[in-house]
Length: 481
Ligand SMILES: NC(=O)C1=CN([C@@H]2O[C@H](COP(=O)(O)OP(=O)(O)OC[C@H]3O[C@@H](n4cnc5c(N)ncnc54)[C@H](OP(=O)(O)O)[C@@H]3O)[C@@H](O)[C@H]2O)C=CC1
Ligand SMILES: O=C1O[C@H](COP(=O)(O)O)[C@@H](O)[C@H](O)[C@H]1O
Image (cartoon, rainbow, N blue to C red; front, side, top):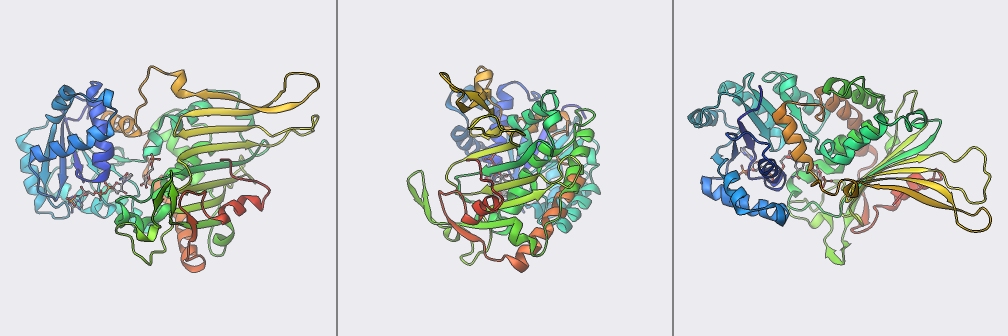
């Protein structure tokens, strides 16, 4: 398949489609990156006319796209691509209607099916596409994370998808891999000779990976209350970041080589199970508090959340990668909702110098900041101007928005949607990767059920439960904020 002409977005009225996918497609359209005859068909159960859907999409895109990037003419030409089809995707019979509708638009060059729905619809949609003869060589399917809620359910989904689509046709999306700075991490590691000799246990004391959000569960309580931070963020985004920090250099920058290296890391993760969960993991749930001066409710009072819920909105973990390069180096992972500030970063904390010459000396630290701003900074020690040898920590600081001021920063979904259209799966998760991640996560979830049922409360607008601080402090370390 070259450039597919149609994209079907199952779940086209959902939060993801309206908040992320359509704005990303609008930008690609505006930049002339979509084939002129490519149509976008949103599918959901709600009965809407085409023009009602276009109006809904316009409202949401206007709110999402920067003012200077949105203009009425571009919108009108983009909206002409948009159509809407109401159907229940769990019902086989409905796919016959869909096939007729699609045939009327005749498409020779293929189709992308984007499943922006809950994962329990992945299997029926794939099977029903096959029954209606809508799945063929000229098609691709995009699956949103999380793929299932456990190893077993992920295997079941992957098997059902695999029965209809070949692995090369399946794009398991993790939007963190579409972020510029995440890709920059690979450039930093594998396009610079500088870091490789010291990127290992002998020189690195520990690694921190934090993805902190100020948002709560918003209007996604129904989904989130059954997922929690472990399934929503750790199983996918945080483990993917860990893989990129820890993996060996792939032999080529292509889908198979990169994914082979990531799988090796997932398979090398030391299991955390049983009572280990009490020492190596922290679960938390936000209580009422203040974000940016505004009072916000406790998790239990969010919409569609069970008042007795024991779902976690915060996780901190001490992880070990059991291989030659990383033996004995802790990787601390942390993610939470309703934290003090939005910030995603990776901190590589180097070991101190072997022999101390100066009174003040701090070990070097490399900070790769993914958001809100994209920057890479290396903390070094330098001399304070003037008499004597007084040292001060200073930073070599690379702000990517300043290095490329003329370039609009692409949203992760823009990049990834274009990769799907072009058939490049380097930044997508392969089946064995997803399953290896679940195989490591499952024992923690099981351990929690037996030994750690009640998440620790933390006031919204703080850095999470105290126990997350102790996780590092007990080892003489602290979170880098
Ligand atoms: N929202 C986000 O930021 C992110 C979401 N995701 C993942 O994306 C997926 C979608 O999430 P999100 O958009 O938040 O979910 P929403 O609940 O907002 O949207 C679900 C969509 O699916 C449609 N739908 C539900 N049941 C059916 C059905 N039987 N047949 C056809 N359509 C159906 C809904 O419309 P209707 O009810 O009218 O049928 C709606 O359009 C989830 O897997 C989520 O984990 C991943 C990353 C980020
Ligand atoms: O996948 C998800 O990611 C978002 C956070 O993404 P970011 O790009 O804003 O960092 C998270 O809010 C959501 O719960 C989760 O499903």
